[in-house]
Amino acid sequence: LYALAAELRAVMWERAGLVRDEPGLACALDAIDRLAGAVEAVGVPGGVSLNTAWQDWLNLRNQLLAARLIVASARERRESRGAHYRADHPGPDRGPLYSVRARLEGDGLRVWREPVEFTRARPPEAAAPATVEIGD
Figure (cartoon, rainbow, N blue to C red):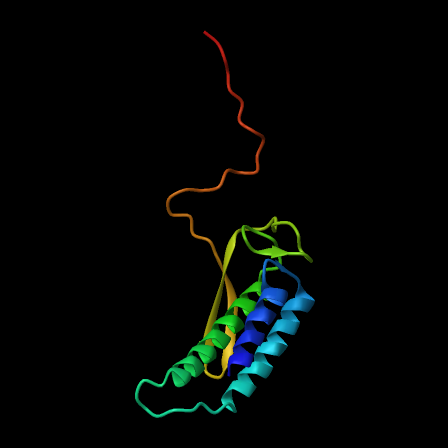
């Protein structure tokens, strides 16, 4: 169990960490799928009361789900923006801003984009810079 958890941490750091790219994210997803299968085959010792190994097993299953959502979202965002840096897409998109959403639906994962709703402030237009008139 703990070796699988350590491998998940290593995969997420190396393949879906600070600098990401499509081949690394695809590799991470393959590793997550493999680890998810392996965790189902892991037995945990102990009884029913205060079984920390069982809690660790449940935590790892949840970490695998969170990792899958992170990787799927990162694959959908084919740009670099903020803390999300894609080595294969180093700049921001020129199109409209969007949020990436991910959700479990049935046995699968649904990933989609939604346009950003600006309710309080809007980014400056890409027009010419404003000029300031100085006079009396």
